[in-house]
Image (tube, rainbow, N blue to C red; front, side):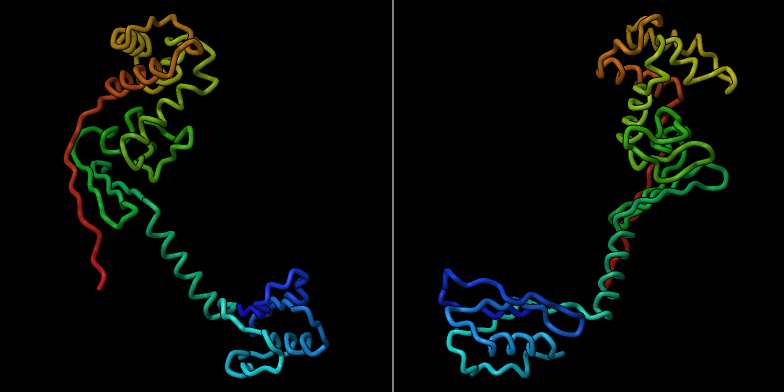
Length: 246
């Protein structure tokens, strides 16, 4: 953009023209005390010229009229290049995760370009998913899937998604025992009663306690107990640094 202004700081000065197009500079034209048609003509010519800088007469007969370069509107090629750069930046800041065919190895591509390979341990650990969730919750979304289970970017996201799940209406509507029945149903080869009793023993919260009366700290304790019931056992993490660019 190129700005034409009168440095006299005339309090009566006001913008006359404000225009732009893809092939010319956009500009503001601010007159001083004297406003004549030649000022308007000069500004119009300046905007319509595809290369106003090289042709602008810096020895203009209009005293006090000073051109100041503030940048130019990007041309289509520049816009396309900028779009490509933005897409590359987006790819660099997006984390993704994949699992091996046998589900025994999880590979997480980090935002900084490094790679984390998680092998051994249990599925919940490999997936950063202490609750063995199928979907995310509370804004904590998975970055991949390992079979039917979600893979989270890190342990904290997986744990927070677990706690957020426990705050959903279907869990809050009943007791701790009811919530565990939903969480680990018999249909999935679980033993809900035993599961709930173990969670109760670990947290000190009775199975008859209404879920909607629990504090966040108590919900976090239940989440930690669920993590143990889901068989959390750590394996091996191998990290590969981001490839260097030259």
